[in-house]
Image 1 (spheres, rainbow, N blue to C red):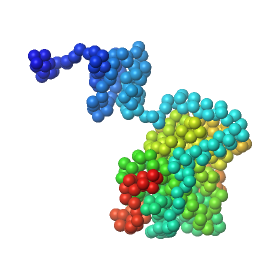
Image 2: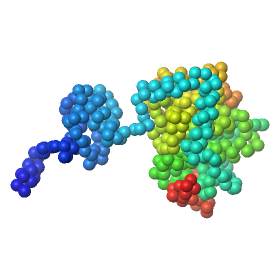
Image 3: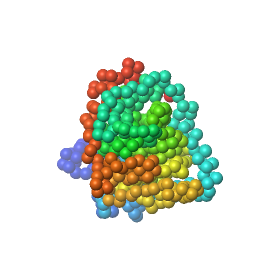
Length: 459
């Protein structure tokens, strides 16, 4: 009792109390204290929030220290599923361990192993034949669920400057709807190409200005562009919570949604079924790569700021289901190669996980395309001074690629100097793009409400 009183008085006086430790207590030290010890010993700064360290203890803490900083941090943090990112010299930030983000060298080594296993076209074709059905199984889409016997819901057709827009909802499972907006050329003759345009992980979903601009410009050039929501994203939030987007089934629903979108749009009499493309950025870029590998109807793909051998997608909608376990282990670059020899454009930048794409991953893809004698059909536009967005430079790269591969026309989208002129596109309020009304008042009566109902369909 006297000892406890002394400790209490010392605490009141602001004195640091260090109790004797032994193996019965596993030599535990609070993580925050260990981090401060690391700072003192290696003369660095480690930034962290209280939430990340609260209640965390490091067992046998002193035994984890080594003579260098990296080994010490690894020994201390890895068992706690934590890591640090280096922000600048001698400054680090504590983060939750990112299973999906590897060191660049690790990603390259894995890609080298995958590459060595397919030295020629014959071995690569066998690899593709192995992977494709496994992807469907990993997503719980083998066999595909029955298609609901319902008609598309079409709403609010608008005539714009050189293009039209109509909002469309498709029932892809009983009571489960995927919503989007179809942009079409205002005037066209014969068959017209189709470009699926899923939205990525940016705020304002498919209602963003850059998303509307991209789809309108594609339509003005002579193709259809279908802009659609990811699962539990955009108008899908009428049926699910935002947190449901970070559930593993999100990846499955998105894949099924893309398949059903193509089923519908390819049934339209004006669709050119040979010229079917897909382009999305960020998480929608991962989605683009997966769908181009799975669905042979996609003949062109353009993932933007999305793909590298050392990043497996930071959201369950990209890596929630075990797609990367297929074929005894794969990654997004190998999955992207499955689209060969179809035309494929990769847009990368200098400020996210695509920063090193041109140095190694692109060479692997060129090797695969060489099997078919079609190296020119895989392209990379790298923007080293730009960051993670679908900005004008990325859109221009996509436009150029579509013009070259699908024969689209630029006369309605370029100014007298030959530059793309996006100013003619009208940016609409988000409500104009809704299928089910401003407040969801037109949501079908059979619409499922909540993730529990979705899970039952897959059980």
